[in-house]
Image (tube, rainbow, N blue to C red; front, side, top):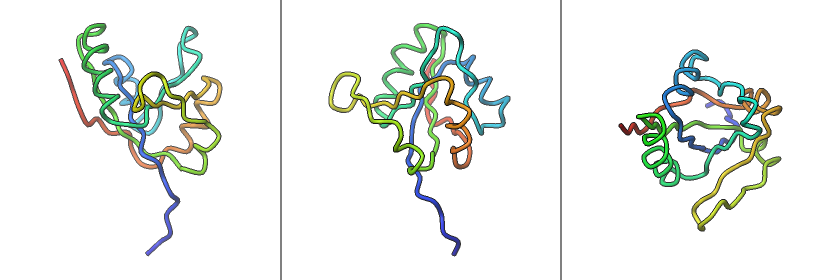
Amino acid sequence: MTSRQATTTLWRPTGPKELDLVRELNWRAWPPRLPEQPIFYPVLNEDYAVRIARDWNVKHSGAGFVTRFEVESEFLRRYPVQQAGGRTILELWVPAEELDDFNAHIVGEIQVVHEFR
């Protein structure tokens, strides 16, 4: 059996436009941030991602999706976990200029695990 680097599962709630861009990147990377988006926010638990996709993305763009993906755990250590509200509202704050480096440490494909309309 080959040794595998430890990974951390992250989730990202997203709308249809961003999801189309991820599809264009062959499910391997997140697209560059827009000028008004200085930070990329993956979240650390599925329930939080579901709430955002269902309650915010659907309202703002007609559909919301929850994606799941793996990132090398060692690489993620540079981003302290941010508590953005309640105990389970945890996310990472990845500066937009570091997103290419972040994408290079994604292991496998970005998967859609929930869809809301």
